[in-house]
Length: 94
Image (cartoon, rainbow, N blue to C red; front, side, top):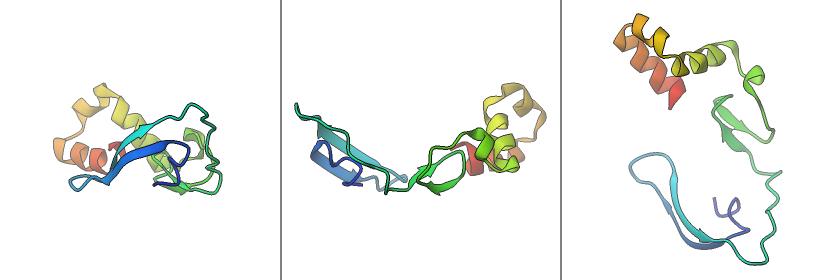
């Protein structure tokens, strides 16, 4: 994680112990230049895995595209039982 923010002055970088993630407190230096992140694979919500490439929804598997569309559509949520909705939301919408 420190590599991603190497172009900043890191004051505090801590792992979140309750949820996956981090807490970062950093300062952007006056002579800031963006760090090269081309060799770092970041997690893509669209693909559901790590990737070094920028992707769009067209690159996602069909089931993932449908689930992401489902997550943003409130009308469809009314037709799906709550148990199924909660499972889909947990797998694809968070």
